[in-house]
Amino acid sequence: MKKKLLSLSLIYFFLCGFLCLPTNVEAQRKKPRRAKVCGDLTKACKTSVDFEAHDLPFEVPENVFIAETERYYAVILKSFRTTDAECESKFVSENERLETQELFPDHKVFANRCPDPTVLFYEPIDWRVRFMAVYAGRTKTDANKMLAKVKATKKFSRAYIKQLYSGFNGT
Image (cartoon, rainbow, N blue to C red; front, side):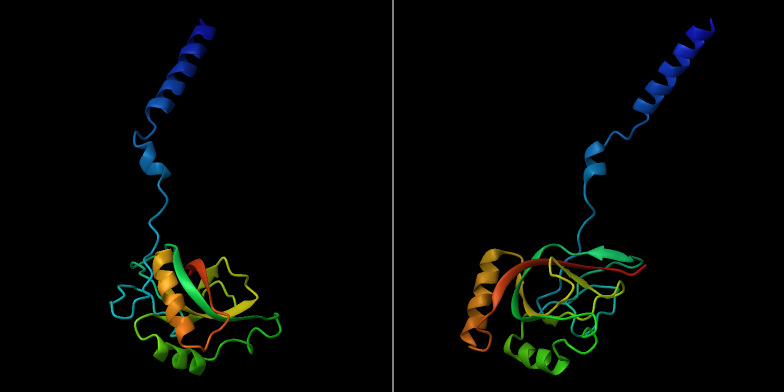
C-alpha cells in the first residue's frame, strides 16, 4: 500500500510539474529587447539616461539599470592602445571629437574613455583601446556609404567599418 501511494504521489508531482509549466515556451526563449541606438542627430532620442557628450546615446526606458543596444555599424576614425596607467590621460579629446562632429552633422561622432562599470562599453573592442568613431547605421550598405563620406574628407586614411553594440551596467 505504501509503495502504491508513493508511486501515485510521484506521478502526481511529475504531472503537476509538467502541466504547470508555462505554455508559451517561445516567449520564455525570447531575448530581451535591445535598445535602439540614437546615432542620427536629426532625430530625438527618447531616453531616461543622461549620456556624456562623447557617448553614443541609446533609448533607455525609466527604471532600467542594465541595458544593451541593438547591433549597429560604426566607422572607426582613430584608435590607439593604452595601458592602465595611461587610462586617465590618453584618450581622444573632447575638442577633437567636436571638430570631427562638424564634418558629420547628421551622424553622432563618439569616443570611449576608461572602462568603468558605470560608463558605456563598446563591444567587441578591447578595453585597452581608445577610439573615436562615427555612427554609420544599422546596415552594411549604410556603413559603406558613411565610410565613403569619411574617406572623402581625406582626414582619416585608416578609417574602417566595425559592427558594434553598446551597453552599461548601472546597478
